[in-house]
Length: 177
Image (cartoon, rainbow, N blue to C red):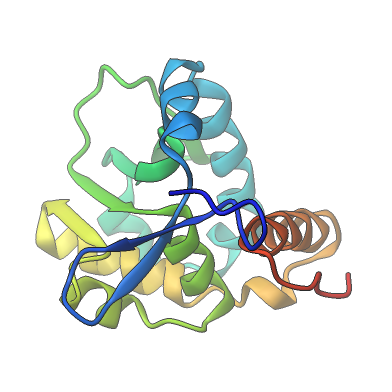
């Protein structure tokens, strides 16, 4: 239930002793009706700037041509990308991903901020990895290796804006940009 005095994020009890903060269902219902390709394009651009230059050659070979999906469950959005010769490319939803990562927006935010470990979220069933487990491990390790706080110029600014938006939705103070 939304408590307008404290937060727009709703607490959800999934695993005993664990509380995940989730966006209201209305946001997810709207997100599912939006075109998903723009999200995937934005992620592909971000990955090309933040991740691709830092990927080891064996990781590049493992990822090349393999469809990957990142689903933000409570926002109702999915990102579909694959690594091509020139970099990450957005994909249409109709192509079946080989691996899918699914979590709520706040859990992805915590992983990026490094306030929550992806393995802990996985074992608490708040991060789901479906499909090719070997590919999933490679992707998880590559994404976990990004220092989101040390991103160059516009990427850092975009990450900080997203961070401030989630923090204000949660009812906390804004972080300095």
